[in-house]
Image (cartoon, rainbow, N blue to C red):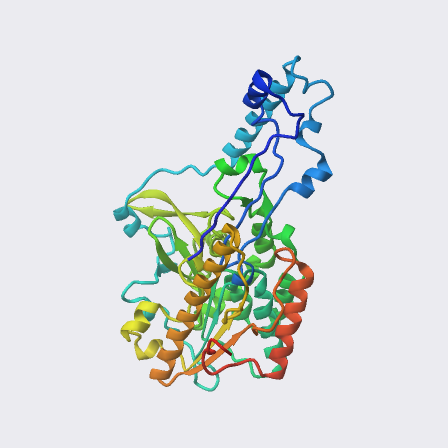
Amino acid sequence: MLITLTVMRVFSPRAPRLSGQHAARKNASAPCDCVRRSCCLVLRAGLFSPSAMVRIHASQARMKRRGRLRAWIPAGFAKRNTGLGGLFRAALLAASLTLAGCATINREPFNERQQAEAAIPGMPQARFWADAPGAARLMAPAFSGADGERSLLALSGGSDNGAYGAGLLGGWTKAGTRPEFAVVTGVSTGALIAPFAFLGPDQDAALEKVFTGTSAKDIYKNRFPLVIPFSPSIASTKPLARLIGTALTDALIDRIAAEHARGRRLFVGTANLDAQRMVIWNMGAIAASKAPGRYALFRQVLLASSAIPAFFPPVMIRAEAGGRVISEMHVDGGTTAQILTLPDEAIVAGAVPAAARPMHIYMIVNNKLNGEFKLVKPRTVPIASQAISLNMRRSMASTVGLSYLYAKAHGIDFNLSFIDKAYPANDKNLFDTAFMQALFAYGRKLGETGTFWAKRPPDEDE
C-alpha cells in the first residue's frame, strides 16, 4: 500500500497590522495575494524507501530566490487604490486554472463488467490479474539454464535505493556466479532495473548509468503550487518518461522479445486503481507482439509501475472492452505488493504447479528489512511518517516471509539480499546523485565478495 498526503498552506504576505474596518477589508482581499509557503508531504513506499517516508518540498528557499509574489507585480500595481493588484491576482488565478486544465485527465466512465472484459488490442497475452486462479501457471517459464535448473530473480521497489540492486547485479557479474534467469520480476524501481537484469551482464554499464548518473530533475518536476489542487499529481514525470525512452530503445525491447521466444519471462507489476487489483504484465509478450503500439506500451508499463499515487500522475493505458476503448488508471505496483516472486494467493493455497516452480529464488530488496529505533516527536508528520514506514516495512517482510516458507516447503533454494540496517539512510534530497553513487558502490562491493545472500529472512533484532 502506498499513501500520499499532500499538505499545502497558503499565506498572505506580511503586512502592517491593521485594526477595525481596515483590517476586515484587508483580510477580505488577502488570501489570493501570494503563496508564502507550500509544502508537500509525501508518505511513500514502493518507489520511495520507508527510511525516508516523508519529503518536505518547502518553497521558502525558492521564494527567497525569486522574491515574494508581490514582487512580481509591477511597481504601483499592488497599491489598493489602483485596483490593479486585484487584477493581477485574478490574472494569476486564471493562469493557474488554465495550467491545471492542461494537467487534468479526462476519460469516459466504464463499469466493472467492461473492466473484466478489457484487453490490450493486438496483445492478448500482455497481462493478467495477480490474484487470478491461473496466475502462477501463466508465470511459468519454458526455459532452463545450462545446468538444467531454473532461477527466478525478484526486484523490489525502493526509490533511489534501487542503486543498491543495480550495483549488486554488477558485482554479482564480476564474481562470476550470476546465472541466466528463467524469470525476472520487478515492481516500482525494481521494474526499471528488471529489463536490464533480464538481458544480462552486457547491460550492467547501462544500469549503472541510470542509477548513478541521474538526479531528481531527471525523474520528476514539481508543479506550480496553485495548480496542484486541480491536478492529478504533485509532480510531473515527463523527465522520467524521457529517461525510460532513452534507456529502453526499440532495439533493446526487440532483444527482450528474442529472449521471450527462448522461453524466458519478464514480468512487471502495476496497480489498477479502478479495479483495486494488481496487474502482472508479460513484458516479453508485449515486446514479441506485432502490434504497432508495443514499444510505447512497454515503456508505459514501466512508467506506471513507478507512478506513486498523488505524487506522480497515474498512467492511462488504453484497452478495449466490447468494441469500446477505455482508459485504465495504473499506478505504482508497490501500492499492492512491494516485491513479486509468485502470487501470494497461489503461495498460500499451495496452488503453484510443479512446472511453474523455480529451483532457485533470488530476492533483492532495495531497502532495509528491519526497523530502526527512532524517538518519534509527538507531532502529526513524524507520527504519520513512522506509522506508514512501519506498515510498509511489515508488508515487505510478510511477502518475503511467505516466499521463504513456500521455498522451504517445496525444496527450493532461497536467497535474499537487502540493505544492511547499519547502512546510513539518505538524509539528503530524494534521488541525490552522491547518495546513489555511494549506495551503488556498496552494492557492487557486496556482489563482488559474494557475501550478500541470506538463506532466510532476518529476525527483528538482526
